Image 1: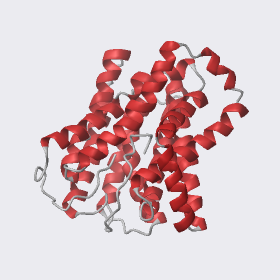
Image 2: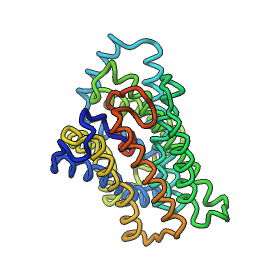
Image 3: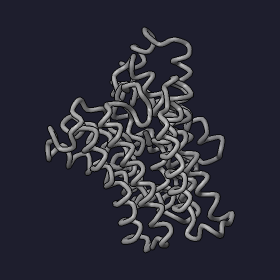
Image 4: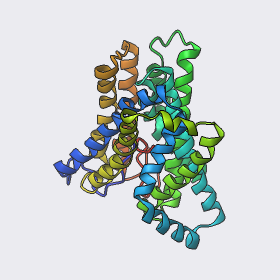
Length: 329
């Protein structure tokens, strides 16, 4: 979850309280994802859920898809097209499939909280793919972030079983793909407006899931979607998905990156609150420690980035990035 670079490194100036609230609201929307995804994942095929998540938003942004395809045809190189396909099929479709599958193991909290490791992947990816220089402090962030993720993943960190390992690995794989998507989005964002790139990301993700859906034999599952599930699918696609994305970027227009980093703490807080109130999930003391370590590490990374007017841990100023919690960045 990252914020765009602000020209003003001050924490509260020139922050609009309304804009700050919008960023926090968007982050809270991401935190409601388990409320909808958990029940759906336990009752419907994962491919069907992810197909709806891509189909509904894509239908709403069809004009942007057409405009984006025309712009890409004029300005994209062959490698750019490869990156776009990876962005849509991998960082959107496959990542969401892995993330949703993690919920089938029963824990609504762990997969969502582990998504906070995405900035670590984004920094590493920017170093490997974009040649950006990684500062020495990033090693400390990486160690602390992975430690926090490990503590979150297992209620008893000294006793790890397959049942607990599988959802953690699935969630981390999804986070890695979304982090990669941030890096690819930054490269392609230099040639295409954010709205068009987001539309194409959804479109290519939809194409990928549309191929997998019949191959898995899940087309018949549409007949099992009752009214309650249909409402949940629509809300999942639009609230923690498209709507949160729009609210997030509207809020960033009046919120410096440093302040946005603070506002984004609404994501893990909402996730924990929803899991406790709805699913009666109580984190163990070590998991709470992991939440504090991981959230704290990501917050410090964001604050340092804003102060230096540079990306998390790297030295080059970035174009606008996708929020990794939405659509999943």
